[in-house]
Image (cartoon, rainbow, N blue to C red; front, top):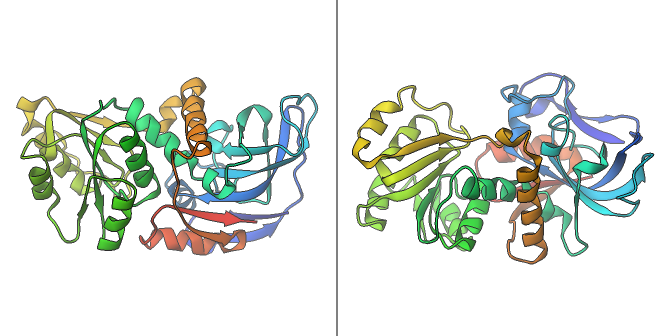
Length: 330
């Protein structure tokens, strides 16, 4: 079978399409033949070598795969050949492994994928799982609260907007162009700020009559993270869950202290805090799968590309023009 992997860290050019033997499932395992493979930022971080959970080289990236079971190992009686399943590497012993025509995983790790669920949309569910956890575990906003989402046109950002609106929250998004702002509006945001054309702080003050927002969800970070605190309402919280824009300024206490009287808070969240809490983690994913099957969420697919073009998929994401999910097919 074909896989895409890298033998050294670097740019998209280090990704190679290689032929490897078909894996065979052992006891308690199943083999899933891929229908769709998700491409995400963690894949890019792995390839660059700055992801904390990188498997040993050579690495097959890819953390989401949806497909059909075509072989089962001894002792597997809960899953049969022909079943449609979704695989997320958060349930596996190590991250990655998805850029492949087939993958062998523990039978207990997969999620049932209903017949009415499109595989290309299923591989975006990791974004909705994370969004559910950001809104129900990392923080607990209440109906009527106002939230601000950085990078709202991205995969997680768009999912956050959709999930937050389903919870009765007022959602403001930040995007990097008018086209992206229009996209975020279509996802249901109450207002969208084009960061290249507007001052974010001024716009938030206008939208909230100077009161600020209750929660800010920031996957960009970088030096601009310090500006988040000035936009918080009393008792507000900044939740940082990524650093696409680089590390924040080392002194976060000074901008926080400027709002000392408002008792603001900061949380640095990683889904890895749930590595040993599968009930919470898997429960969030099952909720996302059920919502997709019921038509309550609608992941936007930016483009579908052949597996062999994985390097171009990485370039597309790194170019900053993507809204929604990039998907590979075998």
